[in-house]
Length: 128
Image (cartoon, rainbow, N blue to C red; front, side, top):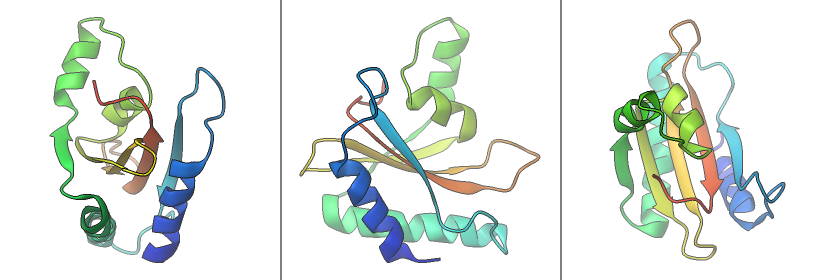
């Protein structure tokens, strides 16, 4: 577990071009793939969030339940927000002032059969 490396990865994603005209986001998994203890995953996510808050100010924190309801009514939700809705309930989002991109960090913990993981997304698309 190396917070400095994961923060550098987020910085890299903020600076990189997007893969295509239609795919306007980057996604990365932070921390180890398999946490020794589930609580460690949440603590690591909080540590990443604390450092991003020191850089960019308080995160916009929101739940994905509203997006899930909107999708159920047939509304199109853009990526990466649709994927985040399927993977997590609680999301933190900052706007990186250098790039103007939205940076999201969340624990993907909605899949009962898998252990939680930390996902980072960088996009130009504001949360819907």
